[in-house]
Image 1 (cartoon, one colour):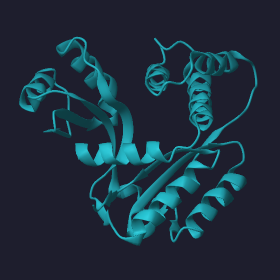
Image 2: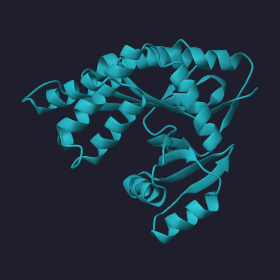
Image 3: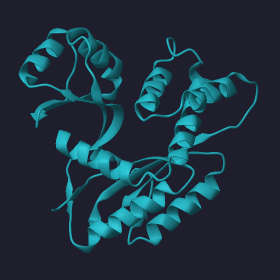
Image 4: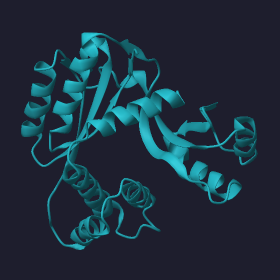
Length: 240
């Protein structure tokens, strides 16, 4: 699972487009989370996670600060979450999460990405049941058994843990995110997370090969070109 997650992360990063688009997505999500849960990262743990990840992805401080300042104001833009599910090239499953101020526009944009790229848009719940909502941590280490034992001693529920190529991956229910992160930081002072996120992890992987690989990359490019798309989750595993 850890290797698959890293592959997916690299694939998404490669097709994420210009830095300005990445900055815009972080800015919008930070604004929404700060607006709904408060602008203080110490009291709004979801905001703190977003800020930490934004910094890790080299989002400039002024982008983060502007989004938080905007959230302090009265009124402002109203964004609503929208989710689309379906099947991509090669029969893989796909979840597309958006933040939008115009659901009709967003639906039409996302539907076009599916129809133009040998993909099929499904209804709500079409594939979400094939994914698990997980907290994901990836960091350098060589003893996954010791990490698991420490987390179990802290009475933390862990879904899976594995080590591959010098990296340890810990998966836990999304509700355990902050407990796991706090525990790992306490057990391993100075720990640096390669991945520190809440994600939808596929229960099974679908092998994508041949012409479907190129088609899938074009499909991801199209989705990432949509202003309202925030995150794309899929179960594709590329052969070769």
